[in-house]
Image 1 (cartoon, rainbow, N blue to C red):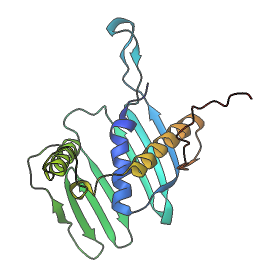
Image 2 (cartoon, rainbow, N blue to C red):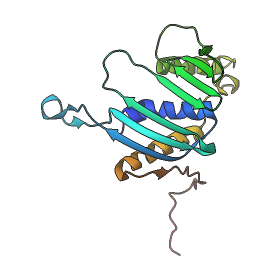
Image 3 (spheres, rainbow, N blue to C red):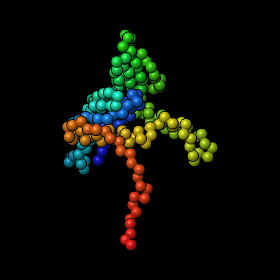
Image 4 (cartoon, rainbow, N blue to C red):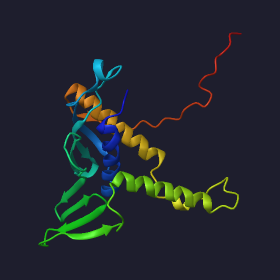
Length: 200
């Protein structure tokens, strides 16, 4: 039925990694588990077995390697931290703030902060998206059309297709136990694909 931590949070992290690095995954390896099953014969019609733990690796073009662990069984507030390490230093995204640490420095420095109230990155992202959509429609007098500028940095259809392809490859890897290739298939779809050829 879909759902689970990989779809809910993993998709955002895969997209964020692509945005921060400018790279895309070419091969993936992953493991998904359901440690806490919900529902079942006593609590509902059926048992919910969506993954609540995901551990996966992405080998991206240009030699970038990413390793992620998503665990939704920890008590307390959500902790979001993404660290990118390279030969020059590292970038760390904690919540909605971005820190940098050069190899020559002793401490990390705050590079980017939205300075708003302490809410999670998912809530902040949703709020930003709705705000930009509102501005896109407000720019037109009749408000039946929109302008592209406020939403020009939004993810495209191709970005979404890439993220879904990576998720599908991680799920395949979970089943096979092997590294799986990420192959985004973009095909021209026949707009009249439901037509039938009538016999002469």
